[in-house]
Image (cartoon, rainbow, N blue to C red; front, side, top):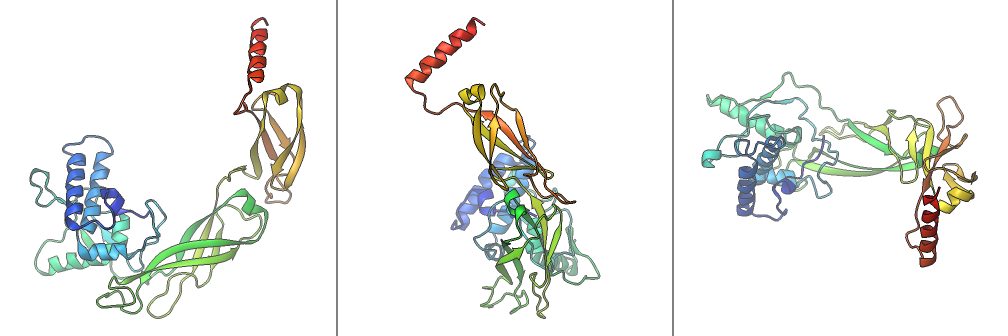
Length: 343
């Protein structure tokens, strides 16, 4: 799931006080309330705003949220705290627009996000249980039974660019995740280890050997690099290999594509150029009268193939204009344009 920056959602700084947070919330809520704003994205923005206010307006929730650390950013892959996999969050909420007059109502449509549930699932479940035990009506928060064994494994997508696929050097893998505080067992109260939040943000920096020629979708298991429970048991880290293009190369199966930039006169008269490939620089000849978009296929200079050998390197011709043109060059281009008019 993706990390949510609640401060960014409300447009406030992390040092914002209660009054500033409330004012920002009211302003945005009025703007995006579904009864007022009929835009397609308004409903989701309204939910995001309500969820952010639910957290930042509550000192305990805000403290737990802030304990995630400062190394997270909006949209970043996020690993939820352990132990909440069995929480089931339905419709409803507890907070939001109470006391806003004609814009009242709780955050009921669609419920809270998975991100919110992963952090506050225990607290929400306890509140729902408390309301039920007092004879009140539970508002959609329930815990599945029986409780399954806590999952200590972590799964992360790991992206490789074409250059990474040409060697089996160790790659640097950095990631962060949350786990229960083993000192207080998530109780949090007066715990110096977790600062009273019940959870710890763990950051790891590993050097992992990725097999040469690894295929996209492959799963690499790192034993004992997952989460740790209160009994000292450790889970595993699973890296799911994903491919992405680099600055110089684009991938298409085992083939590689790159651009060759040449000037107009080079396209007319032909030129010998050096092409950067995954196997090192290679000299190629571009013939006269070469058109933009033409491709040169360089055999066996691509990525490793599954059955052995290598794919091809496809070099595409891109004709560019110099950034700085002298007056003499402009005059020649003008003369050329006049000549072309008579053909």
